[in-house]
Amino acid sequence: MREKPVTADELNAALSAMWDMITGYRLSQIARVAAALSLAEHCFHGPVTAARLADAESADPDAAGRFLRECAAVGLLESADGLRFTATPLLMVLHKDTAGSMRGLALSLPGQGQWLPWGQLLEAGE
Image (cartoon, rainbow, N blue to C red):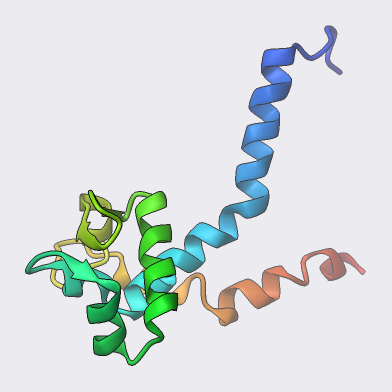
């Protein structure tokens, strides 16, 4: 048992860590979609735009734009103007030709075969 009360700094750190735990699935799904759309490959030869990604992947241009901005927000892409996006080293880890590529993991681990069973964790003890 803890002998002293939790300090404000400890509580703030714990709140931040718990937020990351609760919302972590969002990051894994962003990585999964980036791998599925071959985003690293699209960015390999230069900046990508929402229109170019949408055309290449038969996607909605507005949805592609939102996805590119979200990828920039989490560090997979960079953009000076919010229209043209370039890959960061973090995204290049998902490129199929990168040594040690994690593309396969990004596609499989956040997939339904993995996360659906975890959704039943509470019921596992019944």
